[in-house]
Each structure stands twice: as structure tokens, then as C-alpha cells.
Length: 403
Length: 118
Image (cartoon, rainbow over all chains, first blue to last red; front, side):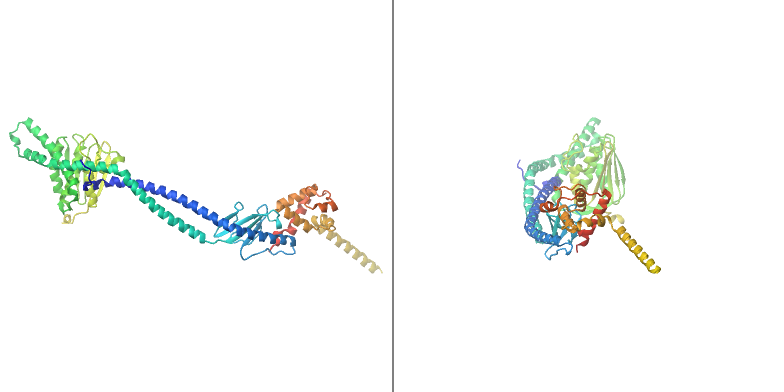
């Protein structure tokens, strides 16, 4: 069987998207971290370059100031005017780091760095060998030229975004590469189901029609029971056929929305599944109010059929199925095996089954979910392991209902 | 005549009291440091600036100077070799630690550059 792209694969996109999203988030975080690190290194190197350029200028200013301090020291206290300049400001501190005099704009000096930025200013410290006026530390301060900062940030932003874009393209390429084997196996399964579905219709229809036509009254009890089993088996296969047909063919057709009487629909479907339920001695408890919903008839039938079918399939023997219908919601509740809390969200995934001991392809609830999403309905699953599962579907109150 | 004698005695007593008062108002620095140094070619202001240039901070300044005054040595003197050759090293101080500290505080505050720079 060849692997080809078909429309049926659209439904498996949710798991694919989830993997894709998780991978891309991780990839994005990693890339951003690496780029941030590179950006930081680049910024630091540019800052060092700027400091290196400024150090020469600041060192010259400091030497000039030292020369003037020496003269002031010699003439002190006849002359007490601290030397000031238009190009820079300065401060002197003694060996105990006590301020002697300062003309700095930013008084918070750092004794441990030779040159540093602070509040848009650059400060430089020179350690004096001769303590003129008691000064061990001479600080020189100039206003910072912000051009290098703007240029560096711009370079980091442009290069970072460009690299991010390139790496994002690589990321998408790798994701596709990694997902291809999974996609291929999903397609293979879809194609198999699609091909098989076509071959199921005629024999199932023939079996069901003939079972219905047979006169049960003329049969002996033993044969009637056997016929009942044939009917159950045929209906199970028929239900599966309906799901597979919907999955591979029907769900892509244009919807024909109309007002559907949900009470009647539930009663019909319960009657249809009654023989299947009776085989496990399961009883239906119906609490149905009149309610309508504007939806495609085939699609709402798939939702109801799958919820009831699952409630039967995963129920215990002699269990019950409660179906409640109100103006804006319905609930299908079983007394079955239940689902583990951490697996509740997985039940709508395609090819996922509650219990591997039961038959089926695990596509029923996936179909339900796709229809629920298509009509923007709300579905809520409450389940307790060993006690049962309750599935509630909320919909907009029908206009017809108000009459 | 008697009134002249009484006036003379009164004036003499007044002068003596004034001199005594003036002597009493002088602090330890003025009494024990200035008298010796005022006859030296190197003024106390110059010594201060020399110590400041060598020791920088107030604590180190006072500690170094105190140590030197208590035990003067050529090795610990900040004066030039030529100075020491000409005038030799001074004798150890006879002031007590408290008096020395008080004198050094006065000396530091007298020439403290922090209060004088403008």
C-alpha cells in the first residue's frame, strides 16, 4: 500500500502541533539564550573598546590634575582654590577612602575599578604615588558619549533578529525532518482504514437488513439468541463503519446545518443501542427535556453515537448509563471503569483507547472532539477511576426551544 | 605719694594676672610644640604638608607622627638626609599619650586641607 497524503490526516494534526510547539518552544528558548549570551559578549567587548579609547584621554586629564595638585600642595594654604576644568570633573580621596574634595556630578565612586560607567558618565581612578594634599585616589569624571551604546544595541538587535530568523527556519526544517516518520506511519494507517472502509459497507448492510427481515417468532429460543448476537455484532461493526466513513470521507463534506430535536435523537439512538446494552445487562436511565440544536444531522449523530457506544463499551456488566438532556447541555454518564486523572486529556487523541481489552480503533472521541471544535461547543470530562465517567456537552440554547 | 604707690602696685598685679591668664589659655600644642619649632628653619606647616604627602589619611598621619615623636629614628623620619645631617633627629617627647593625642588633634585640625579647600 502506498503512502499518500489524504485529507484524513488533518485530524492527527493536534498531536503533531503539540510536539511541534513543544520542540519549537525549547528550541526558541535555547536559541534566545545562546543569542543573549553572544549579545552580552559583544556588548562587553564594545564597552571594553570604548573604555580603552577613553582611558587615554582620562589618563591625560588625570596627569594634568596631578600636576596642578602638586602645585597646590606646595602653595597650600596660601592658595586653597581646587583646580577645576571644563572638560572634566575630579575628586580626591585619602588612603582611608575619605573624601578630601570633589567636583564630581556622581559622588558614588568605585575604588576597585580603574574605569567604569555610572549614570551616563565615565569615571576613571588614578592611584597617586605622592599623596599631594593627602590624596591617594584621584577620580576623573567625564560625560559619556552615548553613540557607541546606541550603535551596539542596534547591531545586537539587527544581528540577533537575523540570526533568530535563520535559526527558526532551520528549526522548522528539523521539526519536519523529525516528524516525517511519524507522519508516514499515520498516513499508512489512514490509508489502510480508508481502503478497508469501502469493503465493509455492502456486507454489513446485507447482514443487518436480513436480520431485521427474519421472523423471530418462528425461531426456537436457541436460534433467536444466536440471531441476537449476530445483530449486536453487525451493529458494532456498523457503528465502526459509520465512524470510519465519517473520518475518511464525510467530515470534509459541506455541513448541512438544521434544527435537530435532541430528545428524539437520543431516544432513537438509545433504542438502536438497546440490544448492544442488553448484552451486558446495562440499563439506560433517561432524563430528557425537549431541546434543539442547530447542527449537521450526521455530525450530531456521530457525537451521540460515540458517547453512548463508549458508555456501553467501557461500562461494567449490569451497569447503568444516565443520559440527561437540558435546554443547553446534555450529559452521558456511565458506571464503568473510569479513566486516570492524568489521562483524561488524552482520550480525545486519535488511536487512543481507554482500555486495550476493548475493541475499536480509538477514533470515536477524536471524531467527537473534531465536531465539538467545529461548532465551538464545550465538552467537559469528569472521571473517577473505578466509578465511571461523565461527559457533558454544552451548546447554545436553541431558539426553537423558547417556543 | 601713697596714692601713686597704690596705683603702681595695682598695675603690677594686673599685669602679672594678665600674663598668668594668657599662659593658662594656651593649649598643649601651643605650649609644647610651637616654642621649639618656631626657631627651626622647617615650619610646622611644612612638616604637616610633608607628613600629609607621605601618609595621606588622618589616622595614618597621626599614628605615624605619634610613633616618631615617641621614638624618633633616622629611618622613620620624613625629613631629608641633609636636614638630619644638619640638625640631627629630635629627642623623644616627654608628653604623655593623652597629651600627645590632644596635641596631634590640634595640629591636624589646624592645617586640615578638607576644611580649607575651595
